[in-house]
Image (tube, rainbow, N blue to C red; front, side, top):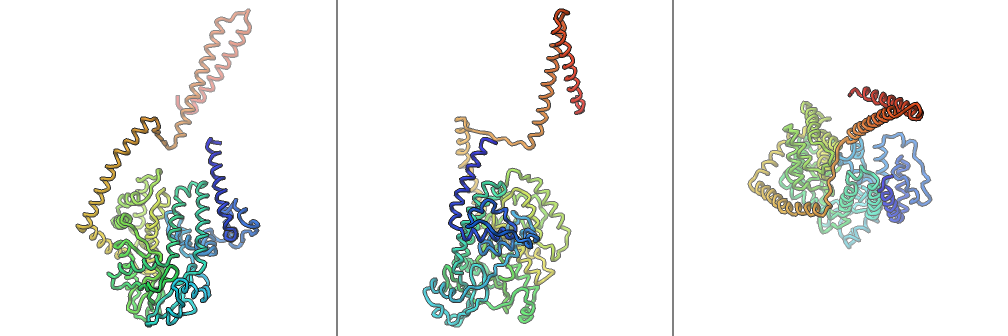
Length: 570
């Protein structure tokens, strides 16, 4: 055992003890989680935690479920575990840089559809949040929800002035369940990360922290109201887009009231015929909307699936449920814009450089190998004609799959961007099987790049570069001084890592062994010679030793010669 192994084991035991102390506060929830995981064949995930469950784990794996593929079993288990697990799976479905493609594809089928809760509970939540009875606030309020999900449900209502609205009401127990699950997840990842190098390399604790913030934001409907209003202002420049208006006086942390929009879903052929809408034009408008959000605004609806899109009678694209809207950030937006443009130009070196600049890069990443792999990926798709199976989303998913093979961690917003492209492209091809995202992306990219080249933006970029250079110059003397002080105090250490160091060490070991054997053979031969000189007939012991030394030296010398000849090197 290595010197620090005992200490590491003690730290793991302490972590386990702390985890158990916290987990003892969640016996009922832990019992449900463990039973679901065991039933779906994931008992190894909770190995060693049986003592946390009251009465132990008495359930066994379901043999029927064991026949299913692992990604499918994972998706079904997450759906049964409830809102937090479903949201976690949906978040993981965006991380093509962390999970294999078969898991990503299956997790995108996660259904956030659960039975509705009683209307009396919905009325009580509204009364608590808005300090009035629903009958006072609304002229009509439907008892049956029009949609129900793990965090809340939506009712159609009419205001006293005649306007129709959609009222989203949070489940009474949603926040308590989510907070308990988030605590369990954070504690489990904290414990597992100490024992799993892959989790540490992927910064699992940080990923869970980001997921926690995203889920808590989704539980606060005021955040969705802000997202919706921001999208509405941004999309005002596009005449073919409609974002519902928020009724802020009827909204709060657990109640959200928005404008009711009448329209048809993307796959509703009868509705399209009734409204006399052109599916090809509708697909083009969806793509232009997403391209504008991503490449021009840098703020986009990150979940544009068919359930969140409607087409109004006048052909406008209505985006619903903006709880999951994402800001790219200036750096990610610039990198994404240039990366897509470099891909269209088949510039593999620029794509590789942008990915390395965008992500957190491990020590083992070979930039030249990454560039070659991207170049091969480009060559594979450059000659492929556009089909419903090979679109821009598919190509970028392949690129994310390539990044998975490298030690590169991308900002969470970038995988979300790729998912938004993939999902929106799926909606477009549903309406138009011949749809091609590339011409629309190219036109929008030109506008975005022209906008970047404006004098004001160039001045901002120059100022940013000058500021960064100034910061580095200010830090440089301090860093040099720190290094010199450590060197002067004798605390400066130099760590050198040499790949495949064991190979030359084995060769050196062989050389030393042969040299030692040669010296030993020489010493034996010299000793036998000395004994032969001083030996006489009156000294039989010396004669015997001479004979033994000569035979031993000959045997060792012959062994050494055969060993050298076997290597082929004299």
